[in-house]
Image 1 (tube, rainbow, N blue to C red):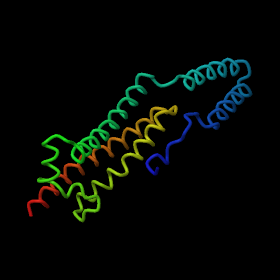
Image 2: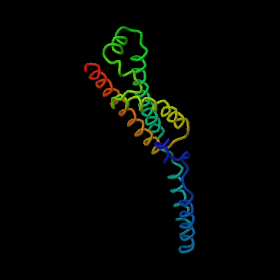
Image 3: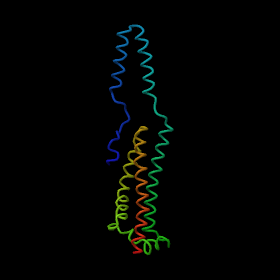
Image 4: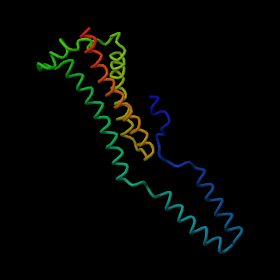
Length: 174
């Protein structure tokens, strides 16, 4: 869970901005008397509007769907491996028995294959954590962090899959 360690579970603002606003309004009233009251009211309304204004829900929906697409990319790679490992079609059988049998070896000494199996074994837990985080209320910056992490994981797994297939083919040919 180190990827999501810096993310807060709640999207609430800290308390100190409210204290600064209240003190500023009090100073305005103390220094300017009646005009300070009017300025404080205007300041309070303007700041309340800015704090209460929620980010565009379309942006949040877009980020959430982008994270889901990255999750689906990881699931696609898992499905490709499962088809390779357990598929009953002739191309899958030929691929795992004649062309790349070493790719099925989870304890392979080939570094690329070892790396792929490591990333693949961690991907299920990662996907479960992402889904749990997506079910909570997240703000824009948290969703952007999730998107960065899932994109990075998806690209790492995709590259590891490609490298492992090449390495397994080379290993079989030698």
